[in-house]
Length: 336
Image (cartoon, rainbow, N blue to C red; front, side, top):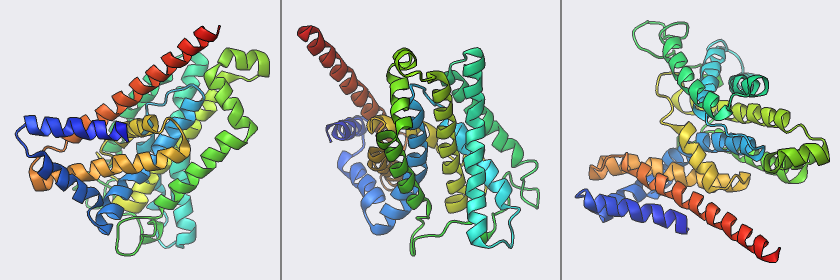
């Protein structure tokens, strides 16, 4: 709560400096995120779904000591694959079409992440660099496919045709909230179980915290395990892209993501990589994103101001972790 309050307090100060009324602006933000059942489900939770998927993928790679900065690119890879497959499923039953669409997104995200995994294993290229750069490649790929093989039938607009009804995720009645919210809950629980209750999850943590010790004592191939974790994280990010197409946009177009891949890193950092904590963290950042739109609409405040609050939250979390690590080292040194 201290972390969240710090971000909001800094935002309020900046609003006052900028000549805006903080009470009016923050009130608009609250209404846009939590002011009604529709706002909560159709704005906050809808944004929390892709953030949750990508943050879970980041946490999976991070547990192995790898940093997947390319969730944005993996999101777009999943969105492209989901659209391409869904457009071929006209007339199919929903019970078959929806799983096929999401499976294509899952596989595409894994495939997109497999390249940086291979580059690190084969050539030692840092995944921080390769995953980030591939995000720009994925964005360019979206621009190409919606003006080429996946462009809508009239060939006028840079987007795909709407996907068939059978491939669209069911909605909560009276809202825009789709089945993806259940899927991300299930993914978080499964990842928590994997981390805490399986031998492979323990090996993953050992590889991340001490790869050399894990190799010598446990015979664990930390690099190979980390590569698989990166690929798994990419699959989850790809699923985020598929759920966005199948549950929200129903078509592919440039700028489909408002930066979910990068915001999700903050989601995972705030949750300290714990899968179950990622869920409320994703909801918080989803609320900030939803509130930013309402703040701009009702109070005339640029939505970019909310990113300041997000940045402050990240900095406070990192500082808290650094101080906690320093305290543990000091205690250990005193005992020694």
